[in-house]
Image (spheres, rainbow, N blue to C red):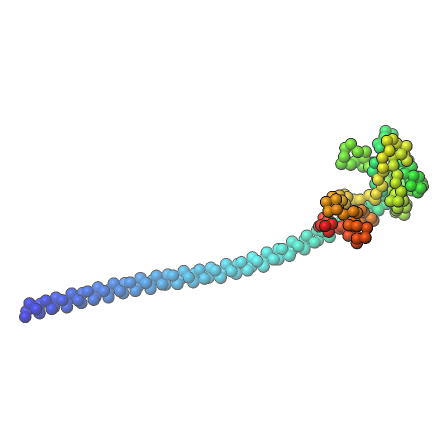
Length: 242
């Protein structure tokens, strides 16, 4: 019996030691698991806080971007209005002017006399005192004669000449030049309107419209004779010719 008792005691001891070891191992695993859960929970809360902060920053950036976009639109509108005012002012200073294209350049020419001859050809006599100033201005084409700009002392006189020039055709023959070629008489546009007119004319050709012209410092277009008139105020308006 002593041997059995001894064996039983050893088995009990072994079981107690095994159970104690299992308990220690389980407790350690539980501690490790709890530590891992705590770590992941902290990381989750940290990521959640960062996500919230990023969402807040993104919202602020979006609002800031919208404000900047609104300011940009306002500045563009202001710049456009300022450009319109400058263009209007520049064109107003030319409202007594005509620009004449196609007059041959000669040595020792009398430009005022040439302008008076053109007036006679148009049956609108021009007195020397009605001319404020006249001179040649350079053109892009180096082979073409410089245009003539004439400023009258009244808009009424300028308009009378321009009105007749739209109905009658004058040429170099009226000025005793050969060979004969047409003269073109138009209102004197400021650089911005002249560029806009060029853009409109190019668009007219591309889209098959019939008419583009200027009148009182305004660029106008019309697809057909029966079509409504379209005013071209800026580069964006050129797309109206479609």
